[in-house]
Image 1 (cartoon, rainbow, N blue to C red):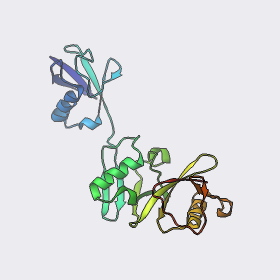
Image 2: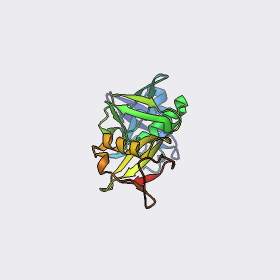
Image 3: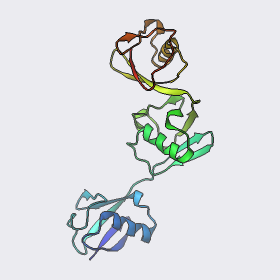
Image 4: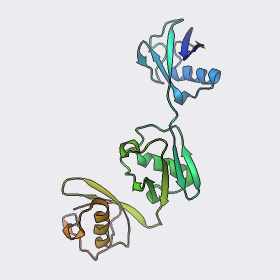
Length: 214
């Protein structure tokens, strides 16, 4: 069967079978018009169509008209010690830890040695850059931590989770200093505990990727 897709001021004819998917329609548009499938949103009868649905699932009639809406190509530029790289085909909802995984795949730098920084502020792993006020034209800086640094998580009295990067040789006093720098809580007012035991200032970090309580 055939139907038509309207793209701005012109229309494209599409030939499909009932069991073809919406993704196959996008691939035809990409082949005919050079528009990446990642930039296409196909709308029929007021509904955006998912890639894995079939023509039959969407009840698309012969010689009917579908509309295509352009989706901007989203990417991040990241300055790394190896030079500037780009992460393409990103989504607004992608969290920082997912971006770090892609950086590891592209550069070989392990995720746990990466610090992503924008406008002088380290980005938290469990949030998207957008949630941390990063704009698409901002350039991220990648700082590589020396081997031996690990992330730890500190839960405050108000149940806020604070993420820190520490060295296994850092003392508890040094951890308190980092909390003071990050959260403006004087280290003299801090008491860190783990597994019900108060941690002494001169002891060193020995537990990897654990959550202490403050």
